[in-house]
Each structure stands twice: as structure tokens, then as C-alpha cells.
Image 1 (cartoon, helix red, strand yellow):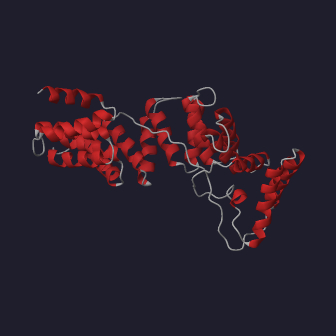
Image 2: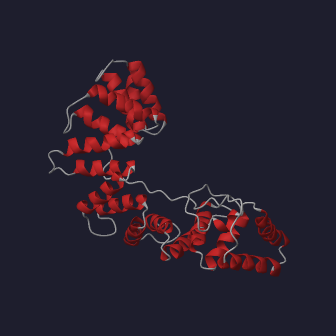
Image 3: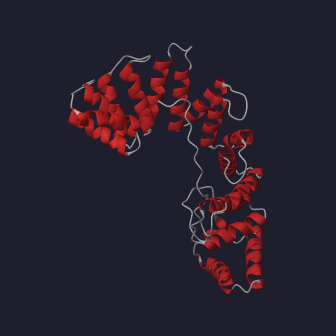
Length: 327
């Protein structure tokens, strides 16, 4: 099991556009963006860019989707497009005070979409959008500060921005903030606050929050019923499809830590997690197959489990595999 785990995940590009048959007229802000792009294109004698702007503005009255500008204010997630023109639109929008554009520009800079990667530029774009209370941007800015991407590492600042993003409804930020509270990263340590954050996210149906909550419970040696309570939380996360929680629950049941020992169920949980690509569980299942705990003893199947885990970077599985090969 991993202690006080956390996964840092960068949020995806905002927006998909609009499919209305009769699109609404351009807003004042949208027209300002179009004017700036057209003016810049004309000044630079960039016919391709100017043609792009004219084409997009001309088709909209005919009822066709014009997503480029609409997606600046649409909150639904979408896969980003590798489109240089989209980077231009977001840049102009950002400089015109449309801060979702700053966020999306940051995503494109970070991933190298529509041009080369620019991590310092991504960090600045996220910072600008975060100041305008774009929660996704605050999350991504915190990730950059936490990891030292695109600038200096600053875990204290990351904690501040995870808090802002968490308050704005970003569950992953709540989880990462909980991790920092649980470890004392970037500020004081407070496991009570960490537990509150993990529980809040778990109750909202986010399995990673449940997983981290369970591990925090298990680290609290003063809780006599920690194993029983943690097993319920891990079971919830496992049923939500989080393979690491299936593995952790299997470990609790296999050892009987705070719960009734149930090796047969542990073996099933390891199988479920292994089939989902969680290779520590493949290793654990291999041990049960090798020893016969919870079911049949089958060294041939155990070897297959060790091979799978070893090929995917699990050193203990490689050691066990080597042992079986010598027999």
C-alpha cells in the first residue's frame, strides 16, 4: 500500500463549442477579438490568417457552428485541437480580458498544440486566468508550482492555489491540498483537515479521494477501528473502478488488519485490480497462487502473474519470478 498517496493531474482544455441552429449574435467582446485578429493579420500581410478570420465570421450567419470564440465561455471539457489558429484566437482573447482564453492558451502552451511547447508561457497564462477566478487555471498553476514546471518550485504557493481551485469546485485540487496537509508540504501538517478534504471529495463520488482517505485512516495508529472503516471506503472506491483501492482492500482482507481475514475474497480483488492493469495486484495474486492462500496452489499461474508484473516494472515480482525459474 502507498502511504498518503496523491495523483497530480492537469485539467483538460475547456469547451466544445455550440451546435445551435441559429447562433446568437457576436458579443461586444467577441467582436473585439475578431477585430484584433483581423487588424494584426492585415498589418502583417498574413493573407492566410485574415482569410481564416473572414471565413469563420462569414459562415456564422448561415447557422453553422463557430466554436472558436464560443468555447471561451463554455465549461464543458473537450479534447484540445492541434490548431495554430486556435492558439491565435485564445491569445487574442486572453489579451482582451476573456480569461477562459488565457486558460486554454496555457493548455496549448503546455501540450505544444498549435506550436511549440512553452512551459513558462503556460504558467503565466494559468496565473493570469487564476487571478480572474478560473478554477481550472488555479489547479494547473498549482501543479506547475508544486512540480517546479515553467519556473521555480513553490509548494507554499501551490497550496494557496490548490485551496482556491478546491473552493471553486475542482475535486483534484481538494485531493492534492489534502495530501499537502497530510504531509506538511508547503505549510503546517494537519491530518484532520486532510481527512475533511478527502472525505468531502469521496462523498462527491471521486474514488481517488476515497482511496486517500482510507490510507490516511490506516496511518492513524490510534484508531482501533481504522481497518474496518477504511475497508468500507476502499470498497466504495473499488466499486467505482479505482484499481489501486481493490488492491489495498485485498491487502487488508488478506492480512486481516482490522477486519475479518478473507483470503478468498482478497484473491478475487487482486484479480480484478490486475485485470485493470494495476500490476502490484498481479504480484500479490502471484503470491497467493504460489502459496495456495485463498484458493488453489498453482506455480505455473503464479509465474504468469509475476511475469506480467515484472515486465511492467515491479521489482519484487522480478525477484519472485527468478526464484521460480530456478526451481
